[in-house]
Length: 164
Image 1 (cartoon, rainbow, N blue to C red):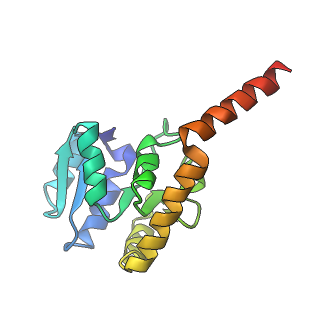
Image 2: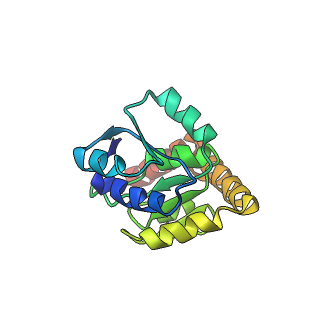
């Protein structure tokens, strides 16, 4: 995906300003407004377009996934699902399927442009035990509800119901 304003890059950069000791890495092709904003904040790294295998490695090294999207075309986010599968606690906007995906146990749901709420969520996640519990929930939820076999069975069930 892109590092664009509608995917929350400017809001993430605002969060980063409150946590100068934390490195924030934004992966994807950045639009110019995000480049200009990131240049002013020393702890924001624009990684650019990155091969999928490297993104997975980045997730394995990360402590938290922040996804402050309000992109109109957003639905079920593959990047959020991948972060959950990687065991990352998540800070997400109450947008599209985000809240349904992490519920109230896989991280923190904030309103769109809820920079202050995202900062509070990140402060809560300073506790390793909190992150561990959220991580375990996210991994379990991915296995329980979003694994290929589970989703395929739901498709088949839906098709069979429609064909009756």
